[in-house]
Image (cartoon, rainbow over all chains, first blue to last red):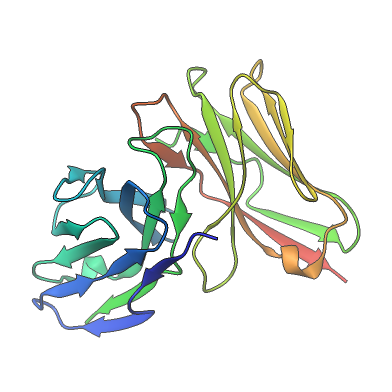
Length: 115
Length: 112
């Protein structure tokens, strides 16, 4: 089974802090993704990556950046956390490059609260 | 707005009965569809997928049906069990170069 591991289940940070969310997958998948999930809004794509050191903006990249230095690891960075970034953050990976017929496999999420 | 939606936000089913969760999509060019299950406190879990050149696909206790004429997708769960209680999402992909869009989900309640 694919395993996508997010380093923290719960995080509480203060407004203005720099926040790092880490994600690791163990199946040599090409693609990695960061989503946020909010009630009534569903899953929204923040950033994704097809390859090491490569990144693409999703639908809501503002206020976020990402880093992919190794194939198995994809980090989401909140440069200066704000209260509207309080959310559930989900990392996912998929096998094939691009959006080929390959389902996303998700981690269990990091619930971030910004106070 | 969302191109993938659901007919019902909540569905209650008697344990042992079959469940049918429906999903409508608006774009006839979508070519790949996925169903996910999300239990409380967990990330979405892949259940089954189907390509647009198929109209039915079966897995273990689950069947996905695709009706391209009316742009409708459904997930059938046979002999529903308490462990099936979750939110179910459908997702679609417009084409191979496009990202996957998720619906907002249907919560499945299992009645004893």
